[in-house]
Length: 478
Image (cartoon, rainbow, N blue to C red):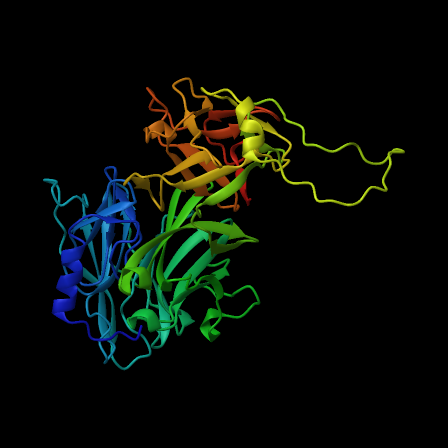
């Protein structure tokens, strides 16, 4: 990482601003993988400190990490938390050290909050082709072994093994080169493959930064890591995972967050958010797996959609009487020589007068681009959210008629949006690219249920099962 000089004044300005609530994209640089501790989320950044969130959407400053330095990472192992950081911050002479330390909790207000003395696990002397900075840690789910990668664009990215009980370098372990000209690396495992994710490009130059995240994979933790065309990451290979998106410039520092089967997120930072003065901000995106490769998913975009069940391809619709459009039959001996004139689409005004005015139930049916099948989805006027997004309100297009969950674990529409929590919806892109739709709460219940197609014509609320297409939906832009 071509790090530029950052003044103490600039750092203090950033930390002062994150002391208050930051919604969606809070200020941070080189964030660690987001870690959950006692119902809250934590991430640490360069320079010390970090962010805390109760819901994954609204963030506050206040996370505590001693040692300063740069580009930390964090992981929970058993009932403890291991925090790792580079002590030097990418100095121009490439001398560096990586240290590990433990804590029973990440909550700085807890009586159990106390970091252990840091332990050096890797160094660089300024002459070898490696920087001891930018650590990324992974606990192998197969073997229980603890692995750490580190390094910058200067020279090699290296792999070492740590002792998961002590956080020290495994006795007798020596670094292995696994990539070159990249930085901010980390490892993850899936379906027999180890994946090395790393950041290419330059950083710390605001809107001119060229950061992007690439990946290679190997059947062995030690490599070689090859990309989708067989090029080794030791030769500069790497398949693109995420690059600049619109006004969010230079994504880097990938972190893998597994919430449950089929629901995975990636954390990162953008070097510059043009909407927030070009500052570096935290990003959280869905993680999709396509043909055995990780790729950044899409944060849900506001708009008007057909909500399509993956089970059958039918559409979510109001359970109202079907209103026929004008026009006679075609074919089968019918006259077909009249002038061709466009048939206007059915409009809301053509049918709404025939609908009930109170609660209306839902069903699933053939999509015919009718008003009772078109849904407008927008950010709810609500400051809460979930890890990676705000809650949404879902209304029938052109009306205030709102999708809502009931205390009987049913899904209905009510005449107007009131902002009640049962009218707020979480929309997660799943690892296969489809979506799940989940109410913020079920009234008078602690259950977490999702919208399902329990039959070819019946929507309901039930437990999420990633293996069932009943739980999955697509959104087709209207």
